[in-house]
Amino acid sequence: MTEPLLEARNLVKRYGSVEALRGASFTVHPGEVVALIGDNGAGKSTLVKCLSGVEQPDSGQILVGGKPVTLDSPTVARSHGIETAYQDLAVAPDLDPAANLFLGREIRRPGLLGRLGMLDKAKMREQAAEQFAKFGVSLPDLSVPIGSLSGGQRQSVAVARSVTWADKLVFMDEPTAALGVVQRERVLEVIRRVRDTGISVVLISHNMPEVLSVADRVEVLRLGSRVARFSAAEATLEDLVGAMTGALSQEDAS
Image (tube, rainbow, N blue to C red):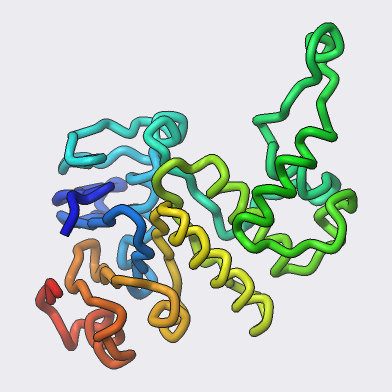
């Protein structure tokens, strides 16, 4: 097994008297999809916040490429090639898909016009089309507001935006929530394509069949600690549910 791309060792995070993480560990290797699962209150969101720079653990260690790092802001996490696609999409509905892809990273026109704040919309649209094609995102028209697209198309744009700027790893928080079957499969196919480009994906999901269909590995949190690890190809729904509920209580390092 290659050296982990990102690793958490024994993270502890407290909010007052509540201990959200109780020595949580987590590992993701280059070019894989790892599903992070657990019941409500297991600590998934807190762990992702710590690994994406939103929160800082009270103790424990985070390593990127085997080297200890301090991810004290999302900007620092991004400097290590780590991006996050949040469940609420965080898209601007009145802007077109290309503008959403470059949101906060707009390309200005050359020369004086650029210095005056004029954007190079043609170049952004051209590069956006290349990125969408790379990740298999099919859109009928790049000039329409993203708010007029289907839920699956909007989610695909949000995913593509994250992976466009992620050099190494992207966290995806419930990317198929509230989507229909066809739209869900479209987003899962984008995730597979992202992995195939060499970018690692951490998928947070409550949908166990979906997890087994797209993940290479599964790591399970329960009560703020990692309690099991599985190869997705060898795991069953019963294995995952047992680990989440405590019927399977020891780490199974496959």
